[in-house]
Image (cartoon, rainbow, N blue to C red; front, side):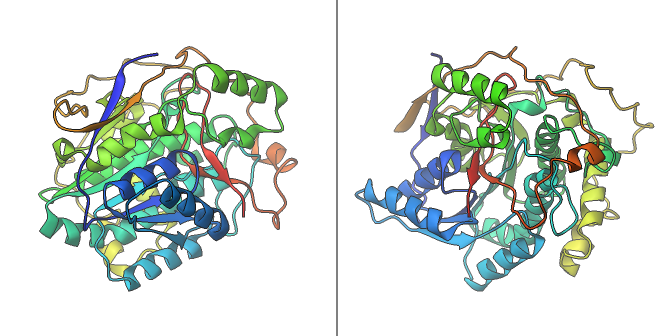
Length: 409
């Protein structure tokens, strides 16, 4: 048992929100919460069948006339991501809230048709593409509403138990694929993108943030269903210390709608409080290198106006010249995280609130696996004509275990 996670009830009538991976688990609770407050909420996921069923459940238990709709988005495909952007633009809707929530985790080495390792593409490359291509709509909306939000659901796995460090030469697992660490690496990239994007949005009413939902009972464990010991460990955690999906969604929902957090400053949140991420996430040199390589990887798919405005050659005023970056930490090294001001604390103590109870896991729990080279992993990789399971909710990891949701086609 622990502290209460309080989320204010805000009137979101007239606002439009997109939640990726919204048909189950945390994403489902995010869609439900936003819709209940009046937002026109788009459930962006791969399976229309599962999304339709999820939307029916949301509406069944509400007395309100909720506006929730499905739009197909497969983050394992660049073309699907571009098709989603095009389809959304054709609706001529504003966009107040974009929540990058969908993720995949702990799957055998799999390469997408676009040539990327699956975890890297689903968790970072395509959310990066989606965010940049929708950014002009968010900016236009914020210019009149005064409040735009872009969120990246990350994971505590990026800062505990897995030794996630930034190695720009292995972003796509071209050197080594480590099944247990690739997911935490991509969650590190989410937090780094959070800071780098906010730096590019000076003097506009858009707030970017990243969240750690905690250790949550969702379907992510299906990613390691072939590892019986890990599955057993996870099942014990689910039965004892894990949060419910609603509890896990609280921090992200709060960051999406809380008027007090319209700060135009990037922070990393855990349990509705600002907290320190992995130190590598705060390194501006690393952030800019990740941004440069991400844009380079997508240069044939980003629209010309986005490339011109947000490409790697674009100057960022707030980034001052730095001395040569220090050597990359080796696996297993740790360093103290810098203190982050907590003046933007998320809890609202006045007015109506929706309260969920915080439960915490063992921060010292750790899951280990032997690293695999790409060649070794290839022996167990999913066949090219077989789609790897893509989690439709980003993980909430307490002490190194995890949780997200796989969506079947």
